[in-house]
Length: 297
Image: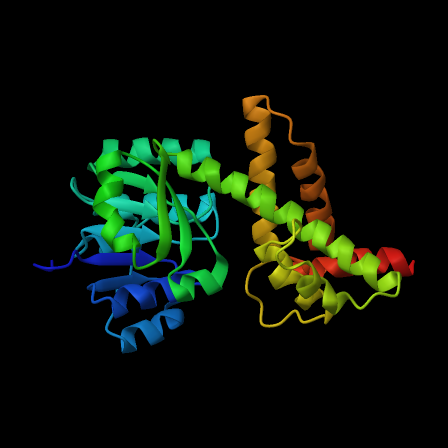
């Protein structure tokens, strides 16, 4: 392990994990990486990363193991599946999960990991998308022991503009659910707005600049409205399936807490409808097609 900077490891070299890993390498951290498809690690190897064959092998050299995976099931498999992190983890090592997972499952996995190998868990989901990952300007909402999060703060400063401790393990995931409820509902109403403007004879490409700085302005408006207005859906920066997964998590959490979330419940059904039409792997900017089709019917 490094005498100066802590050695890091990263599992999940996808849309977010790749630029995040690049930033950690550029900051000088020793980095080992694992991905289900090893070909995605090639550019990181060229930049100095070491590839391992199994997730558990990430623990052999690292002080801190980071995950950025698709969902709760993927996290559980990488941590507890054959060759998983639990097999090699040690007391004193930290697991940092950037993935968006179910809060209850996160708490359960954290307890199991510490009981079985002594490794502690920090859930640290992020917001800001691939542009934020590339620029190091992510918002990071963390759950875990205060000392563990402070230990991570100088490292995560290379990935995010802000790291906020929200409470104990699982609190970061609850905060991410809240974030995604706002983002997804916003994306859907922006799609309605663009389609309505078009059908009413207004140039929808003018909406984002016209509303900039006003009360309706937001990052989703500035990013999604121009894409929707020009039907520019490539390259895919994020996925419909991700928003659907997070909305389903929100509805499940609200049911568990006895809290009413009617807007997010409707958003989940609209997102599921759009996904069922072959759009799960497409960019959420394609949501405008849901309302254009209605208008054309």
